[in-house]
Amino acid sequence: MDVQMPEMGGFEATGLIRRAEQTTGRHVPIVAMTAHAMKGDRERCLEAGMDDYVSKPVRAQDLFDAVARAVAPGTEGAATSARREDSAAPPQAVLNEAELLDRVGGDRELLREMVRLFLETYPPSLAELREAVGRGDAATLHRLAHTFKGMVGHFGAPAAFAAALRLEVLGREGDLTGAEEAWAALAGAVDYLRPALARLLDEGGPS
Image (cartoon, rainbow, N blue to C red; front, side, top):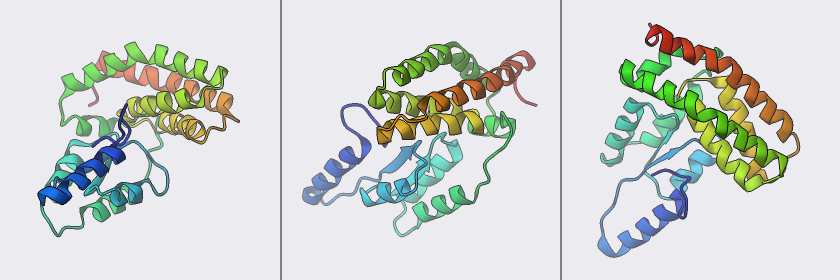
């Protein structure tokens, strides 16, 4: 269950499912998938009635494990997942190549397609973020930054991810003080990321 969806968010959808279960007596396993990285979001997912939690960018094995835990009563999958996420040291490189193939199950062609798609689509997305900052549109900034954060997160790019997260938080809180600087930081981080991704295309993927 994606937490942030148009029309009806994941928390609301989960609430409706759980209320319906009161009359059916059945339990639908629900695993939260969210790019949120704020303190308390994990607990909020579990309190909303979700059985487990995985953060974006989603690793295939983490998702498989969470689904397995969700359909196996009595496990403490969410707590285990939370501990693993908290203990993971954030990468410091512009691009974490070791994680890239892991995230796509070793499929180099899929990775190349992801890189091509990002390089084609990020410029207008970055421009839309700049426009939202310029007109002080916090709601749009929050939505666009959340999406952009997911885009760069797939590539294990910590600086770009952190900058997009900063914009998302500003938009969520409705206080755009510092948004100009945050956007500039994002643009700069992507400028460093772009050639690293381009090299993956030239080299046929990470070795």
